[in-house]
Image 1 (cartoon, one colour):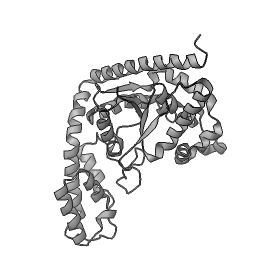
Image 2 (cartoon, rainbow, N blue to C red; image 1 turned 90 degrees about the horizontal axis):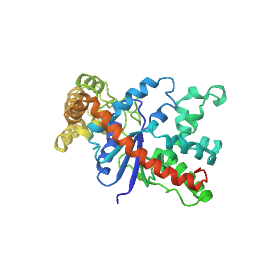
Image 3 (spheres, rainbow, N blue to C red; image 1 turned 30 degrees about the vertical axis):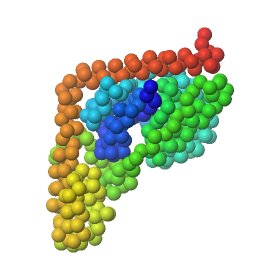
Length: 334
C-alpha cells in the first residue's frame, strides 16, 4: 500500500511561480507515489481573513483550478475543503489541551508570522487572536486525522511539523499508541525570490508572477524587475548573478539560450531591455500549457465543484474512521 502524505494550501489568492517551483512541481511528482491528501485550508485562511470570508470562499475555487492546471490529477490526489471535515475542528479542540500558550509563542514559524503582521502587537499582543496563535494545533489535526505519514515542507515549516510531532508523542503517551508520528519530506528547491530581489516571492509583496497573469501583466512586471545596478548603459558589463532577470531566465529558458544570456551580459553585448523581452517571451511560452488547462476548468466550474466534492467525501470517510479510534482511546466514544 502507498504511504499517506498530506499537505495544505491557504486559499488567500492565486498560485504564483514561487508556489509552482517551490512546491507544485514536487506535488505532481509525489502524486504517483503516495496516497495524497491535498487540503484547501479555508479555516486556517480565516485566522487572518475572518473579516473577508468572501475572499476566502472565492479563492477556494481559484486555487483548485490552479492546482488542476499545473497537473494535479484528481484521480490520484484527494483535493478537499478543510471546513467540510468537522473531525478536524473536533480534534483541534482535543489537542488544545496538550499544548501550552507559551509553547505556541515560542514556535519560530509563529513568531516570524506574527512579526510580519506588526499590527497584531497592538496592546502588547492582546489583539492576537486565539485562532491565529493556535493554527499549529489545527495543522496537527489536519495531518493526524488522516493518519498522515509524510508531510512535504520547506525549512521554514519544520517548526510546525515538530509541534505536530510533540502533540502526537504526548497524546500517545497518555492514551496509547494511536497516532502516527509524521515525517518530513523536505523540498528539493529553495524559496523563489521576488522580482524585486526580495528573498521571498509573496502575494502581498507585489513582487510575484501569478499563474493567471496575462501577457500584458507579465510584461509590465518583468520590465520593472531589478537588474545589476552597476549596469547603466547598454554596453556596460554586468553581473548576471545579481540580476533578477537572469535569475528567472534560469527557471524557464533553455540551456543553450541561457548560456548566451549569461555570456553576453558579462561581456556588455546585451541590453537589459532585450534581455527582459526575451524573458517575457519565455515565461509566456512556459505558462501557456498551464493556462490552457486552466481555461478548461474555468469554462466548466461544475467540474471543479464535483472534484472538490469527491475529494472531500473521500477525506471525510477516512477522517471519520480515524476519529472513532481516537475517541475510543480517549474513552469518549459514548
